[in-house]
Length: 203
Length: 301
View 1 (cartoon, rainbow over the protein chains, first blue to last red):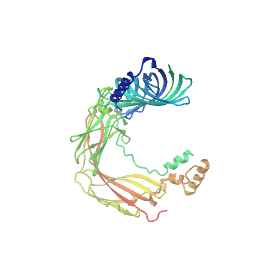
View 2 (cartoon, helix red, strand yellow):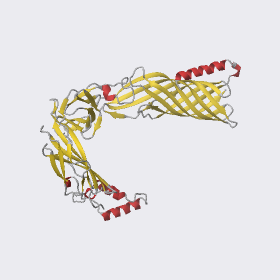
View 3 (spheres, chains in turn blue, cyan):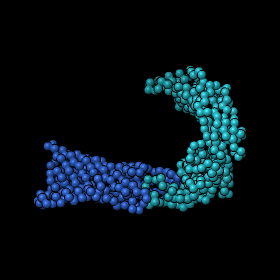
View 4 (cartoon, chains in turn orange, cyan):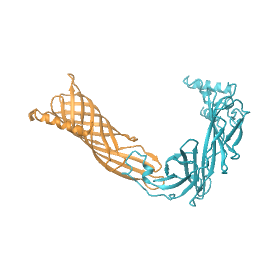
């Protein structure tokens, strides 16, 4: 789904919701997740896995749907060291994202719930290249960053430990397209696939 | 055990002379090999620079640029034959190929996955930039005989090779890629032989192409009884988890007693030149054509 269409969809949901609820009905949730993330570009990058933390707050629109926003902070992740005719080089990448989206869930009679999350991800991606040459000159580095609007999608399962505290496991994907396209003839798309384990607190 | 298997794997290697270009000279030398094969629109090019006989690595954005007519190509692929770099270029017949070491940090990195134009680290040109060599392709080779898939049944026969002669004084050589199979094992090797003159005919005895690997050249050859013992030993050591024909399959077929497909390549070669920046060099441009013949002995066992 294109980020622009997703943006319109989210606005429409909010408009519909704002006409039919009062402040007294509001229920909130807070989620904190530890993520194991693997980045993959549409080029031949081969990033190692890295860790990330995700913090999200959610406002229930009804029993099944919540509006959520939050942030994902990733550790710097490195690509394999490679060699070509110019020398040895290694890329590293760091990304921070702000999320805005919806969380749809289905609660079973047991203390279990399944859910899906979908939304927009505004990400700052920093790419750094370190290059070393065959001669004895010290390695040199260059870096650049880009801010792009992408989307995220996640599926998960929840186990309620108490009526207001739950633990969940989810698999997610965040995509940013055409990174650095405004400054380079060689843009690339970046996906972050993640496996997350977290807790949620309902208020 | 490792020693035995190692000896086994090398027992049937065919000894050939070193075909690498002369790289043992002192100082700075260059080697360029380029060949245009019959029917191909491109020529393969490999180039290397040596200091005191050792290959020099181009780095930082220095690379070989090959130019022929209005075509340009960059040699970026590491080439184990020369210790340098290889590539291919579209070229006409009998044209000149110019090789120059240039510095272009972006072209050297354009195969990388990230935005190389945005994250460009350029250390500047190295000391080899600007040096050149050139060579002209000789006339293309046209093989008249033998016909493709001509069969020979005995190594006492000879292969009468005929080609369109050229008066340009170029040198010729014959290269053969021999691929043999006795139904279970295979054997692959190559031969190289100079051809006397560019007069259009050479008779090559088949016994110079098909070898008997059960002669004294193969002193590490393992006899049938030893093969049986070795296979039994391997069966025992692996507790039966090994191919029952492991030893036989790892012993190369004897070409003399096998059906062999022989791809004969006639190569016409011409020396090129290099600039004063090099102390020595070996620049060779060649044209080639090939024909496939078959050695099929009457009795296989």
